[in-house]
Structure formats: C-alpha cells, structure tokens
Image (cartoon, rainbow, N blue to C red; front, side):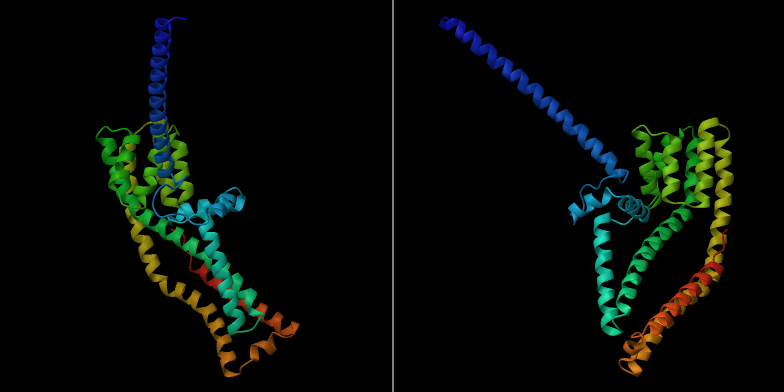
Length: 314
C-alpha cells in the first residue's frame, strides 16, 4: 500500500469516527432529555421523588416498597401529602414505639412497656388518618371553586383536559397538586376515567365522587356539562356550610372522646405517685394484669362508641 492510499484510508476512518461521535452525542442528548421528561412526569404523579431534601434510609425504603405493607403505606402517605418516604416513616414509628415502651416501663411498671409500644403504633396510624382526613377536608372545601372553574372553562369552549390543567395551575394545594397529578396522567396516555378514578381513590369523599362521576359521564356521553357543573357548584356550597355547622356542634363531643382515655392513663400515674410501687404489685399477678387489660379494653370501647355516636354522614 502506497503513501497516498494510506493517507486516504486514515482520512476516511477519521471522518467516520467523527460522524459516529456526533451521532453518539446526539443520541445521548436526546436520551437524556427524554429521561428528564419522564422523571418530571413521574415526580409530578408522586411515583418517584426528585430533588428536595436528601432521603434517609434508602435501602430500607427500597426493600419496604417491594412488600404489600410498604405499598399500602406508600399509598396512605401519598394521600396525606406528607414529604416523607415509607422507609422514613417506618423508622420514625419504630423509634416512637421504642421510646414509649421505655417510658412506660420506667415510669409505671414493666408490664406497661409493651402496652405503651402498642400505643405508639396506634398513634402513628391515627396520625396518618388525621393528616389524610385534614387533606380531604381541605380538598372538599376547594371543590365548589374547582367545579366553578371547570364550568367556566368548558363554557368558554375549552376541552375538559385543558380545563383540568388550567384549574391545576390556578388552585392552591391540595387541589392544585392533585389536579396536577391528574393532568400528568392524562398527558402520558391515561384515560380520563382512570386518572379521575385514582384521584377519587386517593381522597375518598362523597363530594369528590359526585364530581368525578359527573365529569366521567360528561366525557363519555357528552351533554350539558356546564349546566351540570353549575348545579353541582351550588350543591357543594350548601354541603360545605352544613359540614361546617355539624363540625362546630360536635367539637365538644370529639374532645370528650379523647378525654376519656386520657383520664384513664392519668389515673395510673396518680396511683403510682400516691404509693410508689403500687402498679408493680398490681401487675405482678395474672389477675391484676387481666384487670388492667380489661380496663384498657373498656376505655377503648368507650372511645370508639363516643366517636361512633358523634359521626354524622352528610
């Protein structure tokens, strides 16, 4: 091979390498952009968390998400709107259980340690239920405004998907956050029924079910969606005022339901302070332990009965 042929071959290989390098960089840039777009959508729908504060206990969190308990816990946390992973919540719950166990064992008697630990689990579950219910109540209070915005946007000739996107930008949390998830699900190909159904599953309430049913039926069969939404807005306003009046009238009853078990636990501290070691002697026999368990069970029944009687479904 002469020198001219060698120069031509080297030049051709160099040009081919440059072309392949440019194509590789272009493919890398496109893949990176697509990945970032996918991450943004999944982050908005709550399936992954990107940015923000650094996450703790990542290994435990990954293992926990694979279990049935972890999946249910993740859904419950998503409904509360808390910025916490299942792994973090599980560790904090265990720390609370351990702390209450030690406090109950040290201040009362060794028998009360496991009972205090069970109380820690109950407190964690009730905390999630309270956060979830508070978020649902806030969302219900925003439903009249949401229905009014959807009616105005639909009357102006906008599609329902576009109206939901506009409402997600205009409304504050939690309605804005939840509608953003719905809009992102619609953007990646989910049907209107599935996206709104997931919203109703995350924040279950009669008012939201009525709104979702109205939107789904209107999207399927068409019809007077504007008139239906305006009538629904008036109904939601009336239900909002009714719920507020009922909550005000039942506030004292709800406070009583929590005061009953607090008085029971306070009596234990009072007994132990009057005569040191009284709880140790009382729980030192099977009969005393059985009496304590029965008394705690009666307090729990009383708490549940008061809560049940004070619950009025509107």
